[in-house]
Length: 160
Image 1 (cartoon, one colour):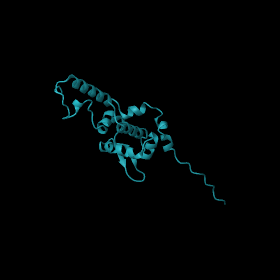
Image 2 (cartoon, one colour):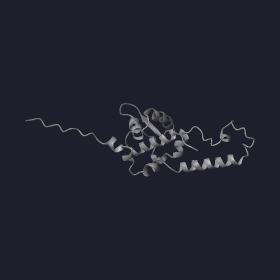
Image 3 (tube, one colour):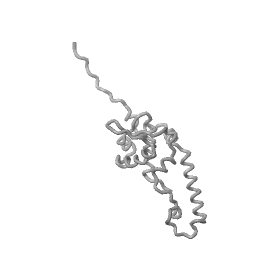
Image 4 (cartoon, one colour):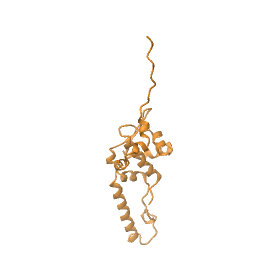
């Protein structure tokens, strides 16, 4: 089984927002950090927003933030909303299987068991776990640069 790029970048968006905790994350900054197009990220945000995994704030100073705490968003939550199909074989697809053994096949049973084990493992890991596993995540994502306050040039005092 292979997860889609949509799932991969959905997890990355959530990790970025978790690392940027307390601040709104902007799509151009996330896109720059991961070297991906802003349009692609906007597309991914839609199912994440609909599922409540992120919140978007519109406007000039808008951005995106986690919809709930990072330790309450599992990888399974993300996969559920970003993957279209979990059909590991033809016999998992409704109305497609032409095999006479579809209802009593050992392969079908084994694959279903494997898929359930996969989901259980994903449910054990949160976005917070992924972020904490990378102590330098803020540096790696360029968040230190994004948050750095602008230095204003010193203005000379008026002559008396």
